[in-house]
Every structure is written in structure tokens, then in C-alpha cells.
Length: 392
Image (cartoon, rainbow, N blue to C red; front, top):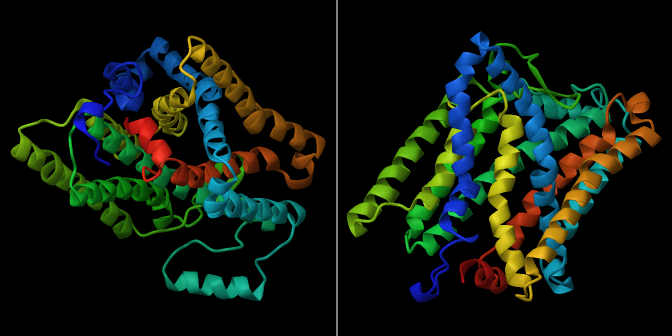
């Protein structure tokens, strides 16, 4: 979206240096420190202890960053009025109702066995013909099957969502810096980012090529590896490498040839961060499951902040009220992700009945999936409201 250069804002927050750390600079620094010190932890008790503390640190940081980032998207979506909600009926009405139906089915028919169902047997025969090790009904019961299914949807939508956010960051800061992209360049950047997201998703199935019993877990929900072939995984790996090289040449180098202008750091930083944290051969594997959501949420905050400031009445009390809203979001996030589901699991005795934390899992996965669909409509720059508040 192009606007007159005289009206271009210079940063999302108070200055571009702050933006750099929010948009990916901090995540690159943390990744670099992990890579430097990881080989040393075997020979240093101090470094080993610090690595042990990392998991605790990012778990606590989720309270003040990850959870509010989810909840503020609900605020942006459902406070725009009935007309906006009805126009966006699929992500804002149909999707949450469909997820609610899925979890109701999972809860009330949790212990049903579906592996002997004729329709399931037929579907599994089709899956076998594709060469995949994955089979429907492998889980102990319908409830576990549906929970595992929803977790896989979450993993797919999370990768897609993170890639779209990086693209949005690049486009916004390109606009701020008068660093323009052609339509084909934008398409190439998208292909590059999405190839990383898909490769990351497919990468988890590599063990199944050698052992079809390979299993991962979300909480205590087993996720059997899908079983894509090594060649299939390799195809996506080289797709990432090739498309990234094409972006370097046809986007950044070609722009430099044309304008003699290097890409601004705040255009590049998110793109680089996405590569080092999402591309399995170079990411920090021990803590990425905790760190990536935090850095994604951190990247989201300056956009939310700018939107909130634009909504405000521009008084001296503005920052105070924004702080109060932030505290409210932290409290609401803890309630939504921790307190309420834990209370329900305890009161309804989920562990005894289902041998799993049903509500802890369903609340977290529901919000993650729905967040993907919410963000797909609230940040569209063809909406004048968003365009005016973010780009001017």
C-alpha cells in the first residue's frame, strides 16, 4: 500500500531502534547466544544451569507477552461492531462454532472406538496407497483422535500465520522506509516464507520414514508421525534454500541495482529471524518450542500498540490507560490459558475420566487456531481503519 512520502510514519513505536528489537533483533541475538554457548554447557556447570533456567524464563514470559497477544486480537476483532463481525462471519462466527462442535464431540464421545468403523477403514486404505504411515483411528479413542487432529491443525495454521506476520512486517517497514516491492517480488517473498513454514511442519515426520511408531506429544496427547518420505522432505528443504536465494537476488539485489539503496534493517530483520528459528537445520532445537511463540508475540506488540495509540484520545493519560489495558489482558490471558481450564479439569475430573488434561489442551489449541483466522481479517490493509492507523 503506497502513501505519500510526506505522510510516511518512521516507526511503529517511538523510534526505529526499538522496532528493530521487537521485529526480530532480540530473537536473533538470543539465537546467536544459544549457538555460541550450547557447545560449552557440557563442560561448564554455570552455563548448564543457565540453560536449565531458560525454559522457566520463557514460561513466565508467556504470561506477560504470549497470552496478551492472543487476547488483544479478540479485542480488535469483536469491538469493531456488528457489521464487521457479520462481514467476517467465517473466521469470527463459523470457525469458533466449528471448533466448539469438535471439542463437544471429543468430550461427550471421548471413549468411543472408531478404528473398526467401515468409513474409517476405507479412508485408511486410501492413505496406505499414498505411502503414508499415518492412519486414522490409531489413537485409543475418538476423544484422543480429535484432540490430536486439532493439534495438527494448530501446527499448520501457526506456521502459515507466522509466515504471514513476517511478510506483513516487511511490507509495513518497506512502506515506512520508501523501500518498494513489485507484485512479483511480494509473491516471491511469500513463497519463500511459506516454504519454510511447510518444511518445518513436514520435518517432524522424518522419523516415520524409518520407524512408523515414531511418536511426539502435545501435553500427553500422542501425535504419531505422518510418515512423509525422506525425498519429500528433501524437496521442501531445497525449496527453502532455492526460494531464499531467489529472494536475495530478485528482490534485494535487483532493488539495489535499480535504486542503489540497501534494504533497511527493519525490513530484513524479521525475514532473517524467521529463517534461523524456523528452518530446522539451523534453529536452536532445545528451546524453540518455547522461544518462537514468545518472539512472535513480541513482534506483534508494536503493531497492537500503534493501533491502540491511534484509537486513544491523545491525552496525557493515554499511556496510563494503555498500561491498565495491558494488565487486564495479562489477567485475562492467565484466566483463559491457565486458571479456567485447570479449574474445569479439576472439577470435572478429566484426568480420571479421560487420562488427559482435556480443557488445558482444548482451550490452548482453540485459541491458537482461532487466532490465525482472526488475524487473517483484522490486519487487512484494504480496511481504511487499519491503513490509516498503521501506515499514516
